[in-house]
Image (cartoon, rainbow, N blue to C red; front, side):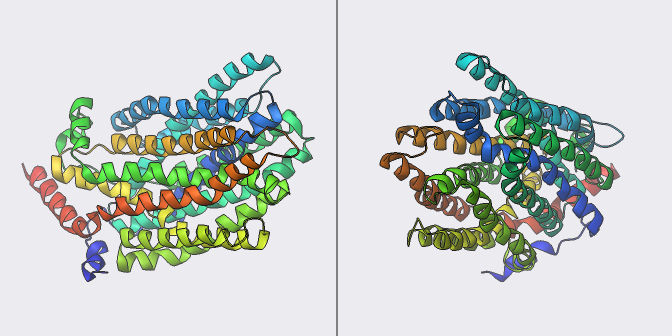
Length: 466
């Protein structure tokens, strides 16, 4: 590790002051609010549609999920533009948390309220409600992501904010994976139990979004007058974005990582049911995957400060590969699987703890290189990457299970279905990790950032003197 990396976090400006704990926590809670619904949908939606609603194949569900995520690309870009153009007394990102919290809750309840209207009718209902949820999630999630870059320009502070964000996101993911099935059983099971469970989750999300809105502040402005006045055209902003090589790398990285995370969430319930022979063990797998991430988040900040985000992420990815390989010792042993998941969880901590902070850093690189600052466009495309990754993960699960002749709701599965589940759980994550290592080989922004930030401050000072 080069000592130059230590200089990444030493550049100080008026937009790099220490962020207080209350604001860090408030910002992080926004992703808790999102994920108490979004992560639960990612973990259980395929299972809900194939085994609870019934009558719809895993392949059909996978295809619906993928095309819905690709459709999100249009809404992501539109929401990024809307965020860049927003100019309210609350800022450009915060007000969207207030405006869309209740619609977000309503749309999530509708997803789990599939009526008995025949197979074709169910598919149509699923397409409409799932896409409605996705659009509203886009509307609240992109401004939330942008908020990180508007709170501070300090790389380390952004990393800490992102660690709070991902720590609470992982907490929400772990909680919903552990409690969702017990709560649905408490409410009587079946479609009614699932609908009531997500009504509870959605009400909690609304309250927490309000906390995030109340506790955060926007401080960062552009170094150019046009960007400060939100006068940058879509054409100019998009053209500038295409010149941002680090942004391109991070979008591709986000796609791969959300495929990885999405696979880990979506396949667990199948692995618990048919490999470990106990569906209730999905909670155990979730804890083994998520708890070490939470522990890792406390360890990651000083490592990032010393070695930089990129190098810390590379070490984490290598550890994750080790965890997957360890499961091969005995894929049917709960003890072996839990240990492997635990190692994976430690490895993924620096990755999820840094990825959005690295995306935020590309905003300054793009502004430095082109003179154009477009936080909304940067995050809209980044959000598109996360959604494509999530969509692909669900689609891949559906397609591979379908190719393996998986039978939804069956008490036993064929050997080909068992092989498909093991492939999704063990082998595919290793391949994805290899792609991530290749992408990070080309990422060098950590060492360039101090000079970039210094140059931007000089430009802003020169502009203000004119």
